[in-house]
Length: 171
Image (cartoon, rainbow, N blue to C red; front, side):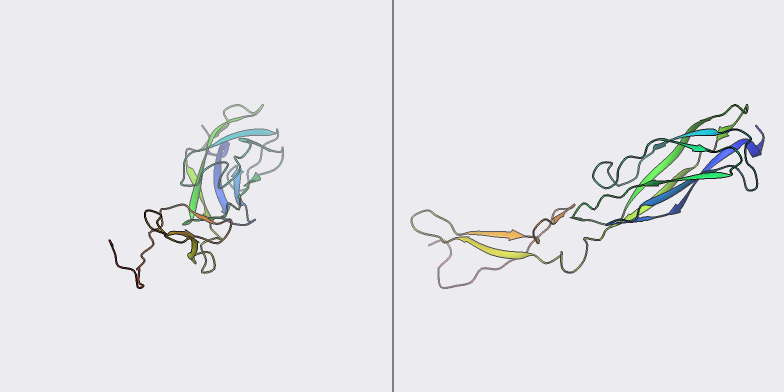
């Protein structure tokens, strides 16, 4: 296969919540174009982000118009209100079709990072709220530990606390 008939995938921009989408490009080698439209198929090939939670699944195909060297597409980020580390979405090309014979795709996998906007000091503030007093003979005090309204975490959160007051433990 001639090198000028191999279509490649590249990431041109990472994503960030709440609204900066990742951008990918499918292209012929520099300076090369086709005299016919080229239909390129791609798929998600892993990453730490979840489709439908962190990003909208991309369409899976794109056209490079005749006479053009490349076409670009976005992977739309979802602002999920979950405190999490940066995540990634990985794509790979699966095939290409054109009226030009022997056009093929490169095997490289490209990854885009999705930066979280919820992992900030305001959202990392844990609140302790009084729910119910204790009473004898068997009603325990009830407290609520929470993140700000609408915010959750992608990982378990350990909260250390201490108890003080005039009551005696175990009595």
